[in-house]
Image 1 (tube, rainbow, N blue to C red):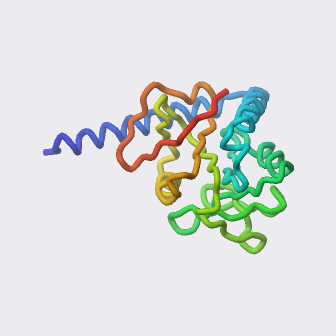
Image 2 (image 1 turned 180 degrees about the vertical axis):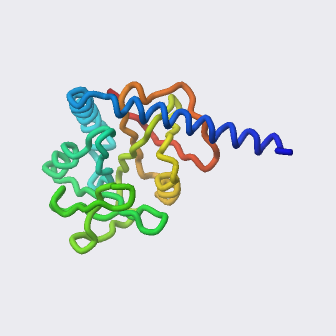
Length: 194
């Protein structure tokens, strides 16, 4: 017979899976023109934040087709003199590498995520990263985040120095009142929405 704690954990997992499936469906239905417009609006808001303005090294993510589009953000941030990192999957962890000559020196890594080719880049020390831009399937009003379910970002966020700013990017429909979460799920500091 399952304990109350085990039942709660199963409910939590089931709730996450249902929400993840629902959000992924909504993301896939978003029209390309709307995705582009909303992503540009998010970029404008992001670039106005104090965290972005102060940051010298920013860890972005190379967006998938259904996510808030980051390619334009990365190019513009580089044009402003920011150094940009992207995560590289190494075993079960994310390791930040500098993204030189973006997007030319990228290749498809695990889960078809674009990441820097190691031969054209080098790792970035976590202590040197000023800002981390975090993807998510959904976020809630307390800045909790629902990822794709593999735990890569949760593990990575735990390794960051406390003073490193973290910002999630989301379309308005990705914000829910409360996300099912546990002690291993780490919230971001701020969410930028359009």
